[in-house]
Length: 108
Image 1 (cartoon, one colour):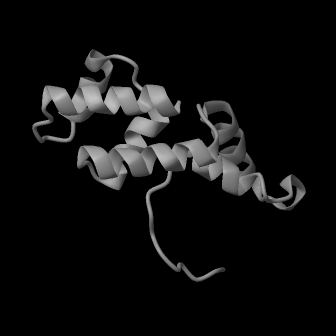
Image 2 (cartoon, rainbow, N blue to C red):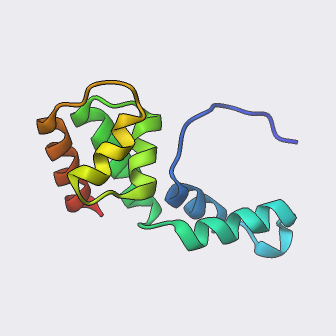
């Protein structure tokens, strides 16, 4: 078993990009299930997801974990976005939500 070098939240799209580098024949059952899942649910490619995540963190003042949640779901309206931010239990200003939606539309 490999040693954990660092822990970092990554999106479904980033997981797919990492797993595509492996030979499916060498994957165990759980890895195959995971690969099947990420292949079905990744909404954008890994590079775009990473860029979007970084931009949301930098420009909107949210955590990486929160940005990953947004990248995995790509909400397209303020109401959808509020459904996620409500669960974060912190106030997100309307102008920040608008900025987030603009960043999503530019990168997704």
